[in-house]
Image (cartoon, rainbow, N blue to C red; front, side):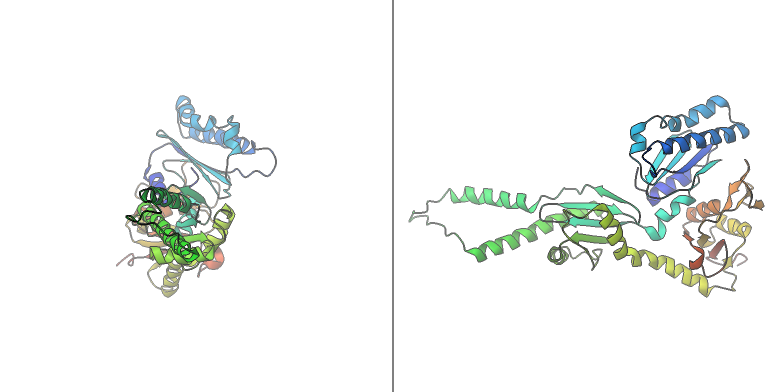
Length: 388
């Protein structure tokens, strides 16, 4: 799967069973050897086997658990068709995989849950939007994030303008055959001039756009995602007039939809919608600035985990690239934390905090250090004070 949504994240977060194994690996080809990803995965599988044995898992159970991932190693076609990063999640329920446009760092986790933090930048401020590639020949709908584009089929699939014209010409021909050009009873028909043809073309174009608009709205239903048009300029203005859809952005990707490439969608489309998705992030940062020196901010991961478990955390900010390993008791109170290697009993605490916050409807932002108003690896904005 090359697309990742909040629903899929929630499905991963729902699984709380041991053993759950997470693999993140880079698979971008840096040489002509497409199998280098398989080499990396083989090494990671051996590491996971060792960890599972240390945790007391029986050898037959380890083989059953990891078999779907081992089956990928000799599949040459699989490694030829990759994106930048590969995420694999294995449990007794089977394996879930995501081929994603993110350059992952090699990471293996054996725990009672899946590691999700590397996926968070696919969501949040990098949210979903739609691109409607529109021409008179066809209309194609793409669902996008900052990093990915996937085409979806509109229902019903709108016909082209040419097909629409052919339908009308066919019915018009049938109608004309009922009359004789020289008949005084029925009269003849007059072939219209160029202006008539222009008017007909305009009417047919508007009708075609109405069909596209109907398909678009049925496909997206009540989804509030922004819609960006990709088409020549004059078609963009006409389609906006027909659709009157507030989700359609004022700016569009200019050019022939038949010639625009995926890279054009990613680069130009994201620039149009980025201010929309950054509003939430900027508002959250502003709220944090306004709460400095108050009891609505927490910096200690121990206190953050407890507040997250109680649903008190409105927003969690994590500094990009920072990790903290530690142990978490059943009551979600961490009794140790260290910057050293992860032991078999330890959790990555920032990732664990993120899952707890999102489980209670909070937001999580993973930001570079220069975007955080405070020098901290993690900051939690509370809905109400801890002791309130």
